[in-house]
Length: 616
Image 1 (cartoon, helix red, strand yellow):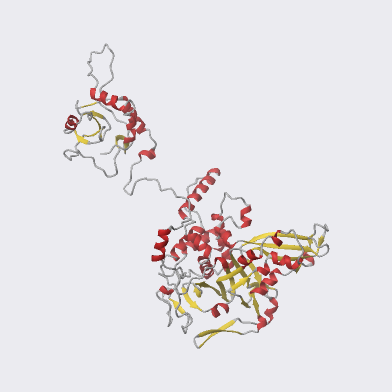
Image 2 (tube, rainbow, N blue to C red; image 1 turned 120 degrees about the horizontal axis):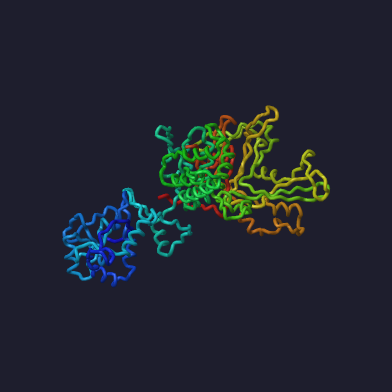
């Protein structure tokens, strides 16, 4: 029996205090053994026993604290009699028959406490005794906060949850590096027959999915490549999710537990409780909407090693709650979903401790740190030459296709198999195609604003015709180019799709489209005080301006009956993610697709693994 808990109130038989001198009753003398114990342990020794007592539900009777499920028994006879006493000197438990023997063999061990009633007992006098300090200990135990004496349930004790420590980057020591070198393996694989298959290899998405003659085994796919089930016109969501799941910086952030759902929900509940309290409402409520928490769960599921297609039903439900105006089973725009999702992550991930200026600089949340860049807009007066400059943050860059090349009717590229090699044939002429560089040239080309768009010139103090030129001031870590394939038709007064073929490179240099390059081309070698003109060296610009393509979201079909899918570049190989189906394809298939969204990552962050490495 251990003395370790709080305690309640009891009626005790004791040596009563002295009565009036005229009383006819003769009182017994005080217990000498209790007096000896008090002199040995000090006056406050018995008062400190309140930590060893607790309130016993349901009536609140005091008793000695014990472990859950512990049954006190006599140390001599192992019996559990009606009265058991715990020695205050050694905590040995004895019954009323063996307590005197324990006191006789060990001088100073005469005083004990009743285990079930929290009453003092002298084993030598074989009677209960009274002490005011012990009574005070009982009162302290009875008036202690409820949390300190709450009974333990069968499902487990009410122990406090371990405190979550702040994230610290782990760096292996020499011994750990040796273990990693001997026993670890890469997560990426090699496709031995990448171009030898006569047809593209397909992984079955479900048990009743159709199989092909050369289906790729799931074990040969790169780690983390997993199909997403279509939940009813949700291909727009699946295509964007596949690109985000394999965005290197986002993947590393969520897989390193930088966003913990438990901590996030605790913070959200505290904020909502304080807000409801200020508004005079009850703060009790369920789990709050957090797209970042659902994305974290999706990362865990996709990179768990399970190859079966994953159903993002929970994420879809959370997104419906976040964007209630889009909560239906209709086909939606993938770019609209991308922007809405980044906004949802931003709302939960932004650091409230940072000032609002961090939002424009892209340092407020993981979504902005990865995708946020800065565009520069120069508006120059055609009369006096005064230039007004503004900077706008962006998470993507929308590019127009050349409308003049649409005059040549192009149904898009068609594919056919010739000797096991997929070839692309365009049904239109070369004039019906655009390149990504041409789109960027048009984006950064000076544009004369119309007469109805005159802007106020601060130098002329009147509205004047002006020239507007866009440029890229800051390149994000991951650049998303949105190709405007849906436009309003002036004749039919409705939306129509632009089926124009776009030629895009796998490696892209954005240096010609940076603000520094455009200013140098505009002003030549003249020295300017502009920050964008001479802030970045050529070496630093070259490091961040070289980009590598890793994901392409495409749209095929008509405006109202189309389909989205994603091409992913993993381990120098391309994979076609068509909802639950994962297919290995070659580069020509990717180049001939109708690109709708292009995801580029800075080349210094793009790591190419050796093709000889095989997934564990």
